Length: 196
Image (tube, rainbow, N blue to C red; front, side):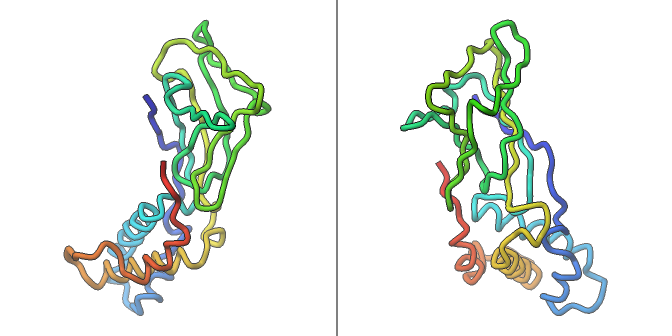
């Protein structure tokens, strides 16, 4: 069984500030600042869910019971990591047969990334996975995903699409039939990641 735990999150205003959103919405008063701040969070979440990714750097800890939970056997054994783009794999730890926590050397694996696909941990050729103690959290993979730590690291098109979603949420404050504004879907489509 695989469990994913959030370790750290960015601040939404690092991607789109309230003042940027107000300029986009052509709002000059401060009466809706709290609402706009909340809508920024919601718009970012909607855009991230649509693209199956994270925009600013998030850090996750993925724990699993054994290697077979997620190990894919292709030409190269690998573990697919959610929420691309993969920034880095911080560490891989495991509980050995004596139930002692060990860090698996990074020389045993590498981080793989491909355009518009989830990142993965690829185990080097000839490397065997360690034998584990029988426990639910026998393996821990900590990794970071996202384009970067500031809004300037995120493609401008993603920010514009998120502002379009925000604009729709601000303008229409009730349920609507369409998922996203058509223009934001069109803009975000090249940034969608395939899921497995």
